[in-house]
Image 1 (tube, rainbow, N blue to C red):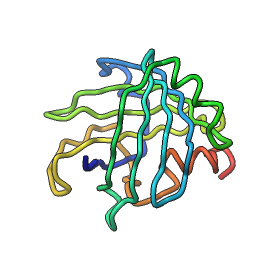
Image 2: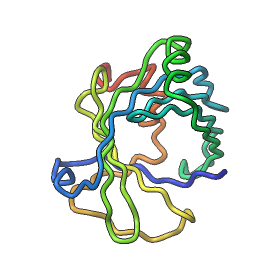
Image 3: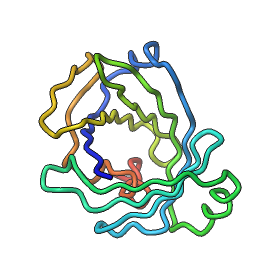
Image 4: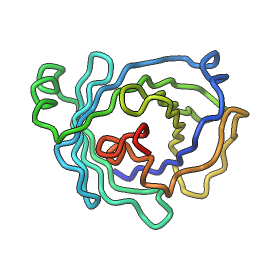
Amino acid sequence: MQEIERKFLVINADFKSQAIRQTRIVQGYLNTNPERTVRIRIKGDQGFLTIKGKSNETGASRFEWEKEISLTEAEHLLPLCEKGSIDKIRYEIPVGKHIYEVDVFDGENKGLIVAEIELSDENETFEKPSWLGTEVTVDERYYNAYLSKSPFLTW
């Protein structure tokens, strides 16, 4: 139940031609306390309830528990979420032995593109494609829970 991931800004849209899948994601937060966030997500035609703990000092590791719920349940829970939501298209791009998840944000976060890569260990090496920009793993402004409250367009 440990999530280890690194986040990067994306500097161009070259990744789109390499995508093996793209899915619209809409999500809201029942709780955005930095100690624990509780998220409701609709990903395509699936619903999810996710609880995340506080990130460690490097920002790369934290507790994550996720359970699939019905689409109907997710649709009923979204209106109960705190003000502010996330709307994005996620592209999945294989690079080496990993899959990058590149989120192209819409709505109040339009213009922001962030790539995430999940790792099995914080020190694991991975390939960095040419479209990958500055690492923002430790910058909490790029956490979705933060973006739901302080959208990118207001920075």
